[in-house]
Structure formats: C-alpha cells, structure tokens
Figure (cartoon, rainbow, N blue to C red):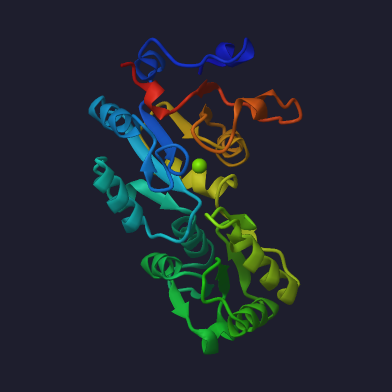
Length: 281
Ligand SMILES: [Mg+2]
C-alpha cells in the first residue's frame, strides 16, 4: 500500500479515491483521536465512515478504553450518525474476555478487578464471574482501573495469582488525561497487583496482537484490510506486528515531529491529516 509515498516523504491529503485505487475492502479504525476527541467528532469523520460503508467497505472499531462496553461505543457511534452494532466494536475489555475464554475455556472462573463494563464483557464471553470470596479458586484474574479499587480487591487478586491463576490486563497505560491533569489508569492498578502477586500480566490491548487478530477475524472475507489510527506506539506498531498496512492520522496523539524521529522503527504506509481525507470531497 503506497509504500513509495512514505519512502519519498509524507503525502498529506489525497486528490483521488484512495480506497478504490487500493482495493481496500476492510478497515480497522481506532476511535479516540480518529473518529472523536473527547466528546467531539473530528470534522468529517462521520461523513467519511458513511461513505466508506456505502462503497462496501467493512469496518471494525477499536478502543483501548475498557471503561465502556461495546454497546456503549456502538450507541455513541450511532448517536454521532454512524449506525453501528456491538459486533463491530472491540474494546480492550472485550478482547481480554475473549482471550481468557479461548485460553481457559467456557465457564472458567475469573476474578475481575475493574469497572462494571469489564465484568459485563467477562460474563458475555461465557466466563464465570468470581466474587472476592471465590477469588482463590479462580483460574484467571483480570485487572482494569476503576474508581472503587481497594485493598480487599488487591489482596484477593494477589492471592488468586499466587494460588495459580493467570493474570491479564487490557492495557498498561499508567494514566489517562483529564482536565485537572492525569488520573491513575490500569497500569497503575496493575502495578500494585503485579507487585503484590510477584507476577507479570499478559496484556491484550493495542499494540499487542490479540486485539488486531480478533479484528481481522471479524473481517473474514475481506481481501485488503488496513488499520487507521492516531498513535504510532499503539495503532501503527500493532498493525505492523500482525502484518497489516496502516494509515496514521494526525488528529490525535502522534505528530509529524514524531514521524521525523529516526529512533522510531515503525512507520505507517500513509499519513493523512484526518480520517475525512480518505474520501475525496
Ligand atoms: Mg487513538
């Protein structure tokens, strides 16, 4: 995909129908920084997504934020004007639940430290949600930050892992941005559990492969699938790890300056100002 473009420098914007020219029939689209920032649509993204769907492109959406359920994100997309269902959404929480089910089997007892959305995903995946008293018998422990995190959860999770349960987390980000400064995120809570349990978690969210592999499985039948994301470290690196082409949009985390940094080994195949530039005006 347009490897020559990036090799000879950045091409900003397009004056032709990239999607048709490249025969792209499947897109894996990151949400934060690509479709929206905070509560606001990134201009043109809704029109672009609807145009892509009209042209027969299949789309799966990704987010590393486990605080919402897939239904929450599907509803938010639909409210913005992009009709979507939960089957088109992969959150790091839903991927985490799928990975635990695939590795430990249907009905595997799982102790969750995390938000309600993560517990819902664990149950929807067919796992048995263990409470604190049952944590010692759990075969898996899933850890995500939530505002109710407390010592009892830390103790139960650590004891379960020390008793042989496998430790999983949706991500390792230490903080997430808030108006009054960074708030502790999953990485911070996970560090406490890992320290207490003397164990290191398996992480499934971007840029780790499981999220991208599940997204690819949702796009079975597509011949040419491309990842669109705003982060070199999570989206573009993750795409490279599973052998997918990628498009970096500059509407979120990563900047042109980041691309100039020679120490970064991962390069996108194409750079665009934003998602809307996939579709000619
Ligand atoms: Mg993003």
